[in-house]
Amino acid sequence: MSEVKLSAQIRDTFGKGSARQARRDALTPAVIYGHGTDPKHVNVDAHALQLALRTPNVLISLDLGDAGTELVIPKAVQKHPLKRSVSHVDFLIVKKGEKVTVDVAIVTEGDLAAGGNMLETLQNTISVEAEATHIPTEVTVSIAGLEAGATIHASDLVLPKGTTLAVDGDIAVLQVVAPQAEEPAAEAAEGTEA
Image 1 (spheres, rainbow, N blue to C red):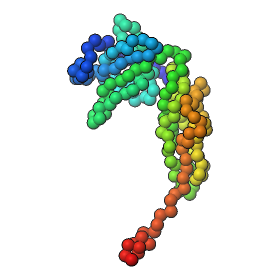
Image 2 (spheres, helix red, strand yellow):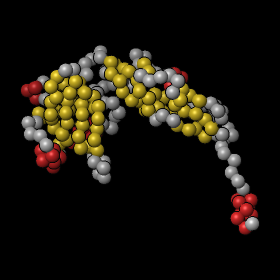
Image 3 (cartoon, rainbow, N blue to C red):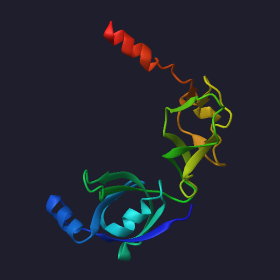
Image 4 (spheres, rainbow, N blue to C red):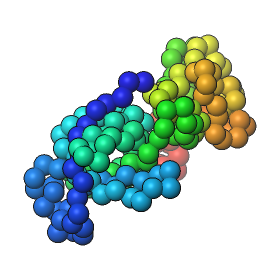
């Protein structure tokens, strides 16, 4: 995964008023923490940050001007409930070679066996441990030819090299269910008349 470079300004004012002013100036307030360092409060260009956050678990190189640069990943992203714009981000400092635990999207490929079976998604994401500079964007699982009753567990997922599960392998991720028999409409109508 390539890293995204963003610039940030250290901020020395705090509170709701300061955060509102930053948002009016097209900046997003954020906090950088981790590795036993004191938290750093920064403002990041809102548009550039929004674009960067389109990639899940994006690796960001934050240029802090005179304070140097920090390699971070977004740990918590708060969004405005109506506008869906990013209103605040917590960044976690990472080092190259360090392992981090993140949630990765599960993506399916292929078609189920014929017969009208349906795929039930039990987990949309899976927690994995990966090197901070090689976080997978998704885990792909093949459902080709699966029949009713088939279940895919976390341990069945094929993870990229250097990535391990951070959850119990017995957790069910996907399952194939048979279609439910529907009551014919004519029988239902007769039952209501009687």
